[in-house]
Length: 205
Image (cartoon, rainbow, N blue to C red; front, top):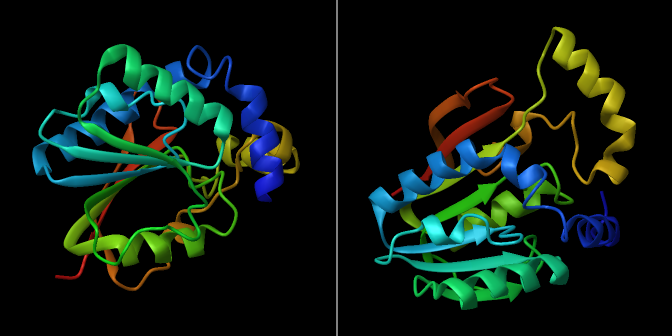
């Protein structure tokens, strides 16, 4: 999916995102942010969207969010202003394939329901590894394609609709395991149905 298609898709989704897809992803976001809160430090959220996770980060963190959708960022900025979220230091328009941050800038990077949306996820993961401090962690919540069964069949049938859906139903886990510096340390399915997975990758110290 090209960036122009992503931008058009999420411009359509922005007004209703919180009440639709956002409500379906609550469990995964809570799990991810809980893990991040226990770590502390500087946090980068890739694909911050409408800012659904921002209020859950604790006040001791320094959170930067990026997104390519200006419409989504506008919603996130409204949340930060209305809720006075002091833990959010910046919300920036940015392509995740070319992060405008120095090397080793963040203790934790989160990617919540975004890696099956972005073009060239291998380039995104390379950039994530670059801006992460040694010993830092990448916290991922995402849908990954099943190998077999009814769900796998549905995913393959829905794959040609990726541009309209705004994400890839057949997205494979191997596409986020391409950065050699990042090693998986946690992986489990998110209840109640296990359609999403929670993963933590750690950068070599």
